[in-house]
Image 1 (cartoon, one colour):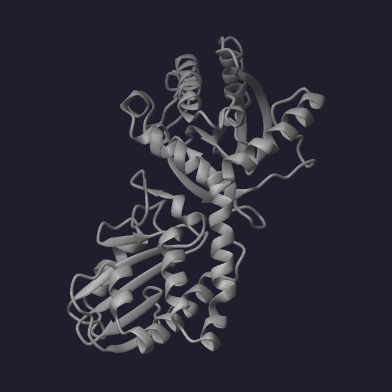
Image 2 (cartoon, rainbow, N blue to C red):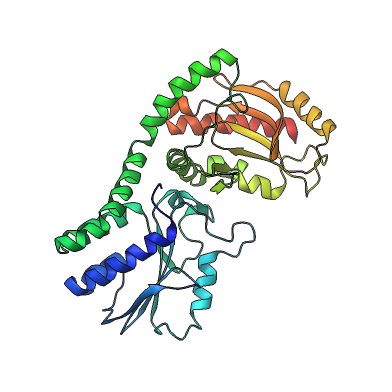
Length: 355
């Protein structure tokens, strides 16, 4: 989301709560944060270090963690940031005994999965996404005096821009596919030549990956044989960061293993990133050429379904890439069930060859 940084969102939210309280009391605040009891008098609205925003009233406290495009801490060690906030908040004396926890996402963070579903890592938090925040800010600003409304115009405008990108993500990617097909046909390849074209459209890719993940993770036809998928960002040397759809459970189980040829700490894994292709990668510091050659040989001998183009790879972009499949994702944006069927066939063939 191309608007300031996460802290600026927090400051604007605090200012809006204060202005809204003076004009309208706590009715709208109670509704948006899904508070079942009357909050009472506003005592304090401020930023805090253990989390992002504290709203304390005479009857209760609201603890808020906000994300724009960043990931919730804890993906790699399992200690989710929101779960730690919930636990630590129980002993914070400046909070009221009655506490409510809210996780707000303004940007691509809304689509990142924890426990294979979007939202916070803690079940104690309610999740407010962009649409709810646009509705809340719009309706709240509308009742403020004109001089106060101007403070929030740019903030609201950029939230609505993000909202429009999401609504139009598939149609924009469909237009991009026409350019991509023409360009790649000249190179007779399925991905852009290195250092020729840098593609990173996380605000378009993540809504798409979020839809795919929801369909995949809720269908036993896919998640039982191939595991559930996770959606999250990966840092690049300069932002914007990469958008990832990773076959997390297969990776976690150490599959594929090539009959034990791949050691448990040197796992192969599958993921889809900003090229919209399926990639087979190997996260090691030193390449084993014999392993890569074996993988190339096995996968080159595999017959792939119609509409799938496969290519062996021999390059490294922080991670070694061994193989790549264009399974027609961008050609079938309006028929995601077809995309999942094609993707599962690719996965089945690859795992059969590499088991």
